[in-house]
Length: 166
Image 1 (tube, helix red, strand yellow):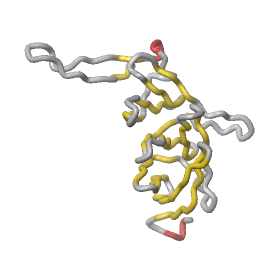
Image 2 (cartoon, rainbow, N blue to C red; image 1 turned 180 degrees about the vertical axis):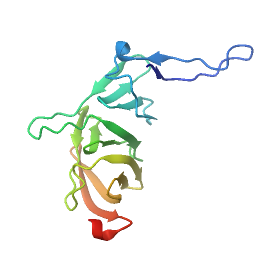
Image 3 (cartoon, rainbow, N blue to C red; image 1 turned 90 degrees about the horizontal axis):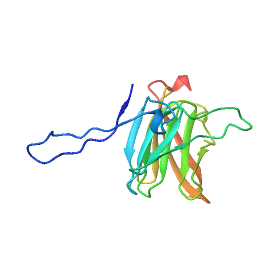
């Protein structure tokens, strides 16, 4: 199964779309793409069950989390989001991940007050310095700061339909 990547409108009289297909033969770590965004720098980002990919229009570069120590792989990507400062946030099967543009690497984000560290993040949204994370336990809202390319969650609230579950 191939991934449908780009649509490009053509001039009148020609086919209305130009379709490009990219597969593992072109550098994707897997043919299944779970989410796509275009960032403010012009890159296309793809989340896959086997890592994060950046496409610059010519090449695909794959990023994966390091599993040394914890043994937990966070490479199954479910959602991608860019905040208003151009930071990239990734919702994975095992928690929240941050992409450092300066270091070009992925880092797990730790939550100080809740057990959201290893929860599946189904959706992530950044807005006005706050992160909204949809998990199986409910909706988390947290404020954050980024120091030395490492994000720090400062506050975190959990919204659930039943507070007794937490």
